[in-house]
View 1 (spheres, rainbow, N blue to C red):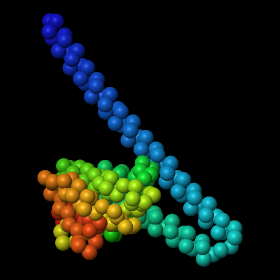
View 2 (view 1 turned 60 degrees about the vertical axis):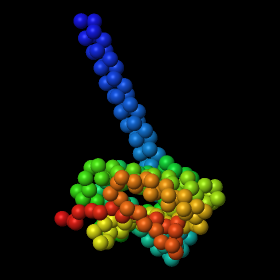
View 3 (view 1 turned 90 degrees about the vertical axis):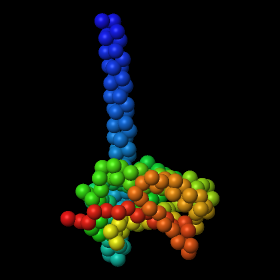
View 4 (view 1 turned 120 degrees about the horizontal axis):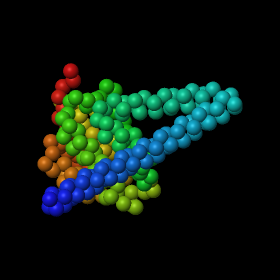
Length: 213
């Protein structure tokens, strides 16, 4: 009887620890979401204040430029939201709120979605690879990459694969270090990586996908 009671207590403590860990992770997600929403609200307020200033000054050409910029930002966010992998969408849309050391600019071709085209394991794997590739650029760029440098991530689809192309805006100090790191990151996955001699700092990741329905 005493043995069963100890086993029950041990199992109960284990379940309690797992629940506590789940709540901690959930709280972390909520915190990131709140930061991301706050960041977006701040950005939109800046744009609206700028637009209001142009209206007050009667600068019609600047008003048009501002409206077009806002429209393009909305379209870009809409494209990201349609990627179809929730964890990846959340990472990309909350990046600016979480990471202040580099700026990630995401550009997607129209109509790209991975919804129902990758399995659950493949989707999680792709999200991890994207995250770790960004971190590799940040790590191997170091302080010599500049203050808050910009990394472009361009996503397009052709020849039966979706291509995620990473391209630093500024001159990148350690392309070979980033390249070696990315090859370790994609090891034992279905994702491949390529780069060119002309632009060794630009790395393209390719993931094969099912054709659209």
